[in-house]
Image (cartoon, rainbow, N blue to C red; front, side, top):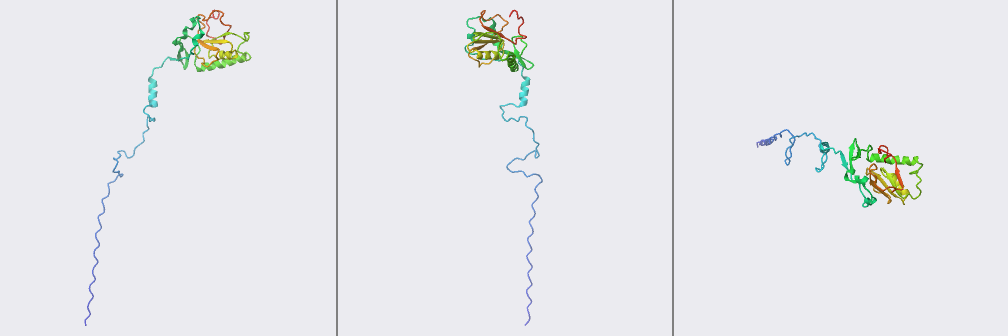
Length: 237
């Protein structure tokens, strides 16, 4: 019996060809599909010339420009508060030297950063700095007189008292506190006195260089100090 030869082995099936690689994407930053491309990929921050986000408030540069363009007012109108019964001080007496109670008495003129009375040729300012100096001078006078407001022998009931050139009114206030039974009036050409004063004290705008306002011998005590540079003729006064 003859031997049979084995069947030839089958060759393996060829492997499938590899799929072609995808084409490379073009160079450049990826762009989101839901936003438009940025035309400036490397922006430089620009400072905001107007840091105030509120449009109702102008920027500092706008304010400065507006201030430079605004005209400079030579005088400021300052309103001095008057009590309802302020006119009762005058009564039926003459008002010749108190005619300055018109609106012009409250107009001040500015010069080198200080304010002065607009309708009087007076050398001293009438601003807050001057008021502080007058109050300091008042305390110096009191110390000089041995802690006294005056040296005149007026007794304990001075009656009617007039403080001419009262300034800030500090002497008149102290006097009215010391003599609550006295009727004290402080006069000046500038309305720089306070409104909260003792009940027996009133302030008036009055020019002592004009015709005398009150009748003769009306006051029991007339006080005057620190009027240097204010009185042109002491004998006439």
